[in-house]
Amino acid sequence: MGGQYYIGADLAAMPLANMALLIAGIMLLVIIAAVVCFVFITRLGIKNIGPLKFSANGMSTEYHMNKRNQRIDDECRQNMQRNTGIIKRRIGNALAEYGSCNQTNVGLTALIATPLHDCIANNHFTTELLPENYGEYRRRVLELVKDEYSSITRAHRGEGCTHQCLPAWDGGIRERLTECVNAWLVDVAREQLKACRKKLRNYAEFLVEFEANKDAHRAGFTKKCIEKNERNIAVIEALIRSGGN
View 1 (cartoon, one colour):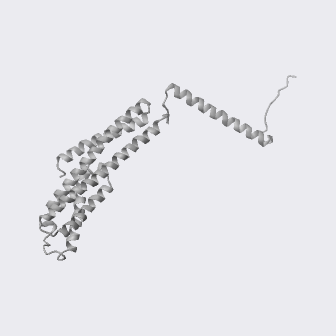
View 2: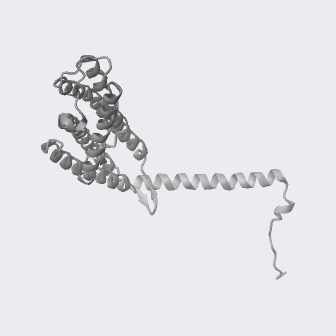
View 3: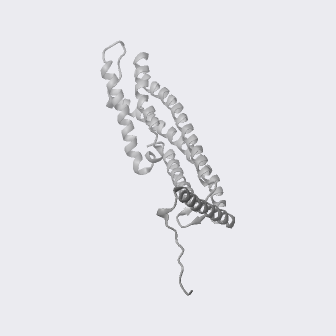
């Protein structure tokens, strides 16, 4: 009477089966609490709590947006490769003006076009066409073309053709091949412009969905992509007007 009673549990003395049940019960309560919180938050329309971002469809929507952008890039690269075939004909016409034999022209045309195909395979034109990069990029492409031209003219000098009269690089052909490279760069820029416009529409479409879902994180990222493509479009349009020079 008047004494104090203590009720406690000696976990060390508790049988393993009972301890397992206790742990399982605690885990079940945690899961139930998490589900209840999620349902409560979803019904309230809350999408963000601190660093946590609740967006039921956000990841899936972003995936589809990126997949569409990938298809746009693939189509752009394929079109660039086809346009390079047109440039090969221009190169062949330029070489024919110097009276060299057809066999030499065909070999030269194929080799000169090789670095152009390689440039497309390593497509980074969204950065290469920017004003701060374009001059150096154009110089590198011309240097590749010059190297190919000089290599084959040295290898075939005096062999297999009685009309082997291709000039040295600085003997007039440089200007004609530079015109071909400029035309190729303009064609590349036009294809990149088409791709940027398609991406712009793509981002605008998915931005509506992100904003409707109150997904501030993905909406903010998509807006930045829209601004970037708008800048790229303005830059590429100016480059095309300049004729690739």
